[in-house]
Length: 179
Image (cartoon, rainbow, N blue to C red):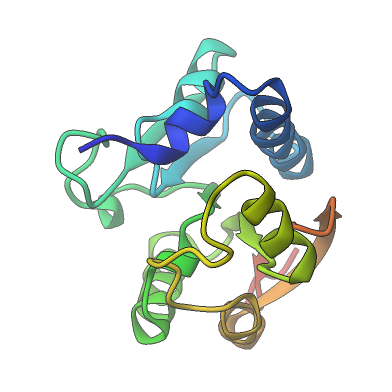
């Protein structure tokens, strides 16, 4: 199975490469990583983020439901302090997102979640059309609004970035965290 997201990081169009790589760089900066952080790249795909962070000396484990793409078969067996879910939740049903967040909370109550979610607004749809793609992505089954409702019910938003109006990047902490 071809990892279409990986293909965007290596796309022949330099603007697309810039967009996806800049989005990752913004998320990493938002995470404020420390060398002793245990990091989970949830929904890692071919591992662009995971590999980038490993090259920088971070301890990173990748999890993906697609066989052969992650390092872990069961993401709940580690205790990450930072969890990245980059362009993942829109592919997952709402009830499953809730279960995933509850799992994250059980794994480490002091975790931070860094996520990127496409806005799928008018601007993003028209950009996709200009790129020769469908305005809507067929396997995006949960909207930004629905995802944020779930995240805000379980977590506290620390900071957000509206990246070029087409991607929402946010950092969350567990509501129960005492820090």
